[in-house]
Image (cartoon, rainbow, N blue to C red; front, side, top):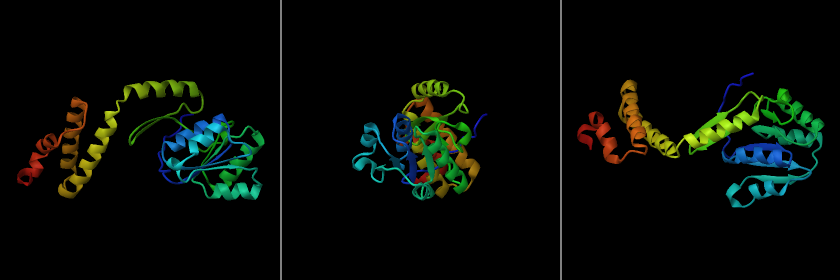
Length: 217
């Protein structure tokens, strides 16, 4: 089954990972790419997770070695924007999934795709550009291969171009009321940037916008 790709903002929001091993570590790494406040709870937490969440770089992230009672687990889940069940216990993962389904909290269950309400994609991130790859849970290996190929074929300067065009879009919204004309300027700037394989110089932007800027520059 193909899954619809949905992108959400998790920056500085609590994302709960229940489990402290290598599988949990991979989920933690992905969440940290998006500046989430990752809370890891498990009776045992591996050194790699502790190192990943340590220091001031990931302020707001927590490692907590504990066995949660059902009321404690529900409280932790209720405060989260999403949950990952990544323990080695099928019973515990199923319990986490059940609570999440009841509370309407998105959950990823690493050992039971049918209990998931979302799947983790293989991610390529370049600045503000995010590309998610998923095979519907059928083959994570294929997702990984596609991710590596995508990583190699999407240049880093794409992120800089996207940022510059975003700033240009904001500027045009204030100065150009016509939607079609704004789109014309943005397409022209994007085409030149990709041809040059870099962001545009101020003079180049002024040349593109000369119809709009006229005597203003």
